[in-house]
Image (cartoon, rainbow, N blue to C red; front, top):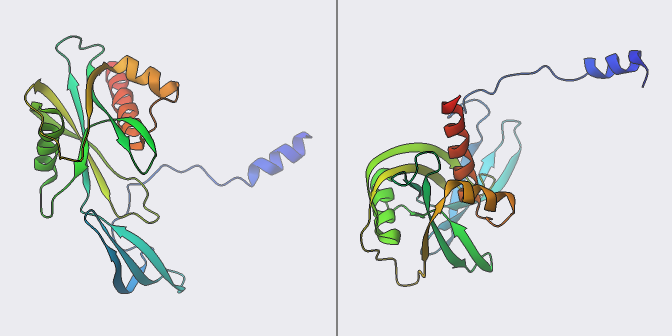
Length: 211
């Protein structure tokens, strides 16, 4: 491509901007006119919301409403601080039709504080208690239709105990080195979204602190 055409093409590109913090309520928010529950189950309910977009368009949105979930990145540094061991679970997921490797996680009970829920889920699924807790991140897995917020905590100073999972949970528990988890991610053997995002963010932050 001639130089003059290259420069013309470049001039049409939008200017680079830094990412801003996510807006809460206000700018460009859709206005809710009405909402009705069209399905209610044990874990979630589905609402059909009549809304008006910022451009004035009236439409409907089908939304899965959920109490929210917690994810626990339980880390054991007693064997190695450079390459800590991560508490991982393997269980069959009917919706996916396969066994998946995952971090411990679970839904919040109505009105339950996220940290309390994370502590409860870690003990129920793995038997571990943790002496130190800190938040890692909060995110929405699929905000186009799912209202579930995922709050992630790092748990350290692990103390083993007896697990007592729910009766329909059949969980294989394993401690795996972080480096091995990352290798399995690269090979495509870990397909659970929450586990991918949390492990990769944790690894990124550890590397950034060492620089």
